[in-house]
Image (tube, rainbow, N blue to C red; front, side):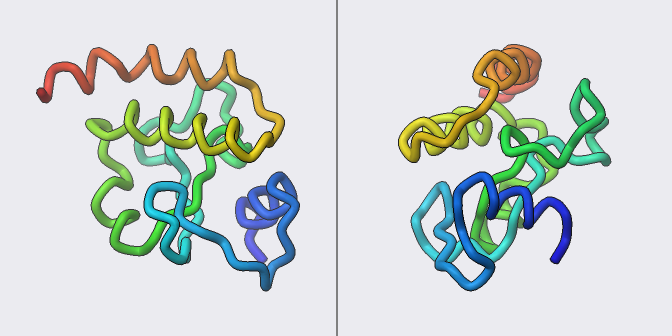
Length: 110
């Protein structure tokens, strides 16, 4: 199993064969998406494989939202709400800093 999938499963207390819903639609989450991927410059700490940067998505959601800076705030906020709802420990300050970093990019597209 790939490192980022292991991290996601361990953080959520899932076994590999457990059902994993999309964090956006609750449909089967077949992909674990790096919100900030290497192709977009990664994240400031250089550690892209952390729960704050990993979210389960359907393949269609991954194709639609993945690797598109204009959806970064949407994805980060949705992921943060999901982690809070599930009571998964995460670095909230880190996530808020990433949201602030992308807000100007996302505001210019509306």
